[in-house]
Image: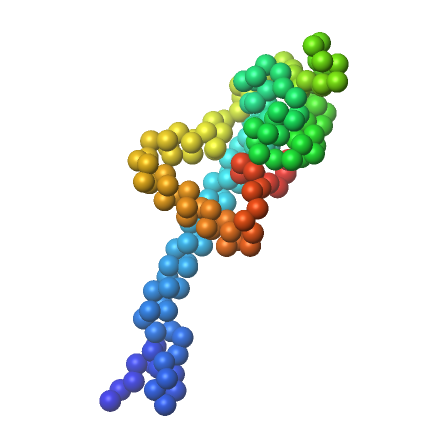
Length: 179
């Protein structure tokens, strides 16, 4: 009887690691890794397009969008909305202020508060910015049925846990790299 070398690598009949079941698992792993690379590639491409058209990172764009929506906002309010630490938002605002996209103004009603306000340069950059990747995702996600949304959320949470090894809530920012 001829042995299938893809399934058995020793004369004692013990299967090796390349049997049909493992090959199927490896195929699935490859498909998953390809999908992850596609997500990363889309994120990187959008980040480059945004940098070229508006001169800011996706995370900076989100801060500018929040300030534009509210008219003015405190750093703490922006941090809460983005689900990140206030120190993270402070660093982002510092960069946006240096680039001329936002300015800091003392609140007229509470002198202890500093408000973040969009500048004309920031408004121009916002108008030049391409449709945010998060917004496109949100629009498409919203059109899915409830069961599809729940499944995607569960799978993405599981993948995030597998990749970073923690359950920590790191916020709703898709681009943790450059702030």
